[in-house]
Length: 226
Image (cartoon, rainbow, N blue to C red):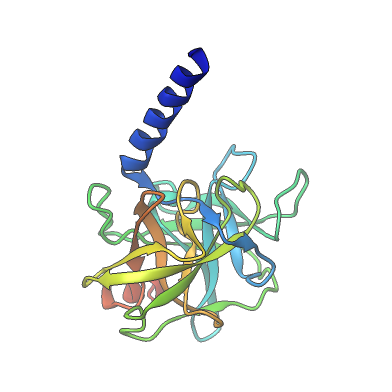
């Protein structure tokens, strides 16, 4: 009887957790990833492992930046962060340093303009991804990549299905997996390409609301002066 009560209690906890709106920060399902070396783990000052995800991106000419969510970097302009490029985080792993900048119109309540860049001090010598053309987020599937739990510090990828879109959001449900709890800032990619159409932003383990990068407000910030 006691075991049955404990099981029932656990089920209640899981149901409640699934119903909460949690930051979409971890790829569940899917597979360990060795196909997207330009996806990076974002490490806050004082943190011992990646706490968000970003993507090394060509932003015009010879310019490059790690693009991530605004809520993944400190509020203060030019705050220093580290990033990690690799399939799995480990003690002593090599990191690159840079300064972070949030979109000036980021709204922490609605998550509108939830975009930031990290300008690295040195080139990590990784071929970058690139921003999708206007309207390229209006598609049926994307590939999501990130370093979150339940595989914290390990790069993981999965397919997600696009249900519909708004003027600045993608709304998705799981395909082979899903962003769930630890991957904010990871890219939504056109499958089989380096083309970024959105960033993992918020949701639950059964649905996502991601920030489109194929729209003017996001693109003008990413490619403009910081």
